[in-house]
Image (tube, rainbow, N blue to C red; front, side):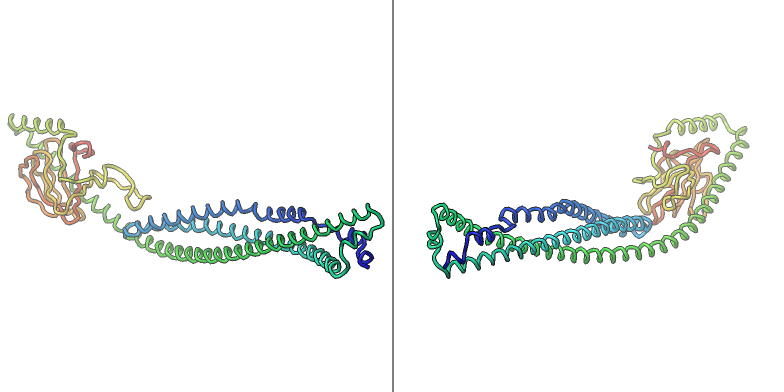
Length: 410
């Protein structure tokens, strides 16, 4: 009979399963929490990676602008070295992301393994419940099982156990379904992590190749810089030689003129002496108000000692200032005076020295000159023209002392 096949004892055994529906949910929550927490760290790494990629892009754009200038090899070298350093930092970030993905994958796999164990236990219990349910359907009716009880109290207990039995079937079915869904979610997450890792590894390899390319470029630039340094050193020596020749020529011309004026001094008339004093005082009084020797010019090399514009470890001395103007620009006398020397100096082309009593102005690097020694020159009068480089070397002397021209012109 049905009530002999399915006793209260057998129902109690079936209903004592260790995994309740609430227990399964709690277990799943704990497993998923171990996977979710590192996501914050991954987001931080992704933000850091994005920031580094922006910096590399900015460095690349800046380097592109620098490379347009053929003479800025050193800046290119510094720019590439900076980009290589940023790429290396980016590679470190990539590796941290990959390591994190590996740990996340391990955590996800651990969750899957635990879920599989839970699922198998639930499946076994669910199968046992279904088998019992099948026996109940194929046997006598449940009501007969209830009414065959020896007492009303026993019948009520049988009815309660049957209700718990049906509830257990529903709970196991829900738990099995939920476990299956969580398994699918974890498997999808692992696939996503694998895809992200493959993408990161590909990008990482591209960065390695980019670094290798940058390093080859830096090696090439180092060779060019070495060659440029040799050329610059040779040019610098040539410039120093030309500077010494110009300085010697100016000193010689001024010294000769000073000695000549000493010889002539006793022979000068009162008018000539007054003119000398007037010119001398007028020039001195015009300090800071004298016109530029070229229109629209700008200072490209200042007076005195300062670093070489291309070789920072080398200092150069400038007895005047170098001005940049238009090609072929007219060079004008800044104050009335007399031409005491015109000569050609290697490296400085044509040079004109004009005397203003005890002051002298020097105009060098002119392609053409239009005055001769002994000519009286008015203020603002053209004395020559610049060449195709548009550069003028300009000096002011007070007797044998060099002064800073910038303080004299307006």
